[in-house]
Image (cartoon, rainbow, N blue to C red; front, side, top):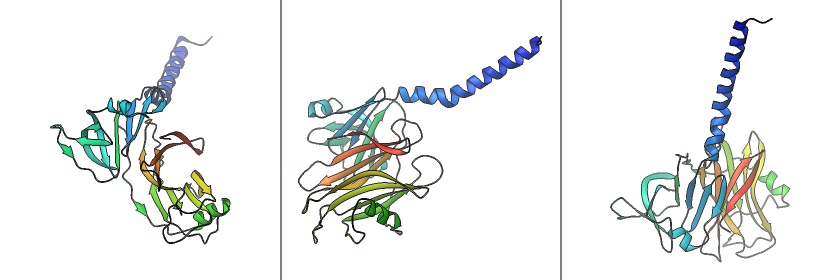
Amino acid sequence: MPSKKIYIILFIMLLTFGIVMFIFYGIPNIREENIEGTFIVGDNTTWVLREKNWSFLRYTSSMDSYSWQTFHVFEDNNYKGDYYLWHDDKWYVFDEKKEAINLSGRLFAYNSNVDLKVFDFQESKIDDYSFVYEVLNENGISSSSQFTSSYKVSLDFDGDSIEEDFYIISNALPIDFEPETTFSIAFMVKNNVIYPLYTDVSSNKGLNGCKPFYHTFVDTNYDGVSEVILSCGKFSATDQVDMLFQFYDERFNLLISNQ
């Protein structure tokens, strides 16, 4: 019959294992479950996260209810400070004395019960078009197509200490040429594998289509993997399209948009 000492050792081992599992798996899940936040993208997009559910504030009256609340404010993904935001025809920024703060770049702001990581990133030229040509071929687009936008963003969005490359290729809103096919494509390359993020291909000509750009990379749910806010502008619309994507199960999934 096992001695009392063996039972005590087994109990200590099981207790230690339980504590370790709770620290590494239980605490992050509890934290993610309880994260709440309001996220402002540009002039008129406001998303709210409650109990892991996203909602889009479609009406001005709903956005007005968040006026004069304090937000962490970013301009072109550079942290500017904690300021009051007030909504009228767009979001306006004010300091603690309620004096206006002039921001001319892209606005991103959030108010959350946790501090979230927002990436400061730079666009760079594409130096190797092999992945671009592969994506074009997969979508039936000629590799000799002209672009109105083509660049990449390199950052470690998933915290594995290795930078991933996020590409944008588009011929939307051309000025000096008229394409047979209008396309706007965003994708990520990780370990030489292509992961589609956003694809819009149509036979429309002229100034149709939506020209995309990476607006913000932010870890909205505090899990160590950044979500991607992709925005695009249409010639016929004053408000840009804003979309929030999450990388899960080796693919990008659309969480919410302003459409």
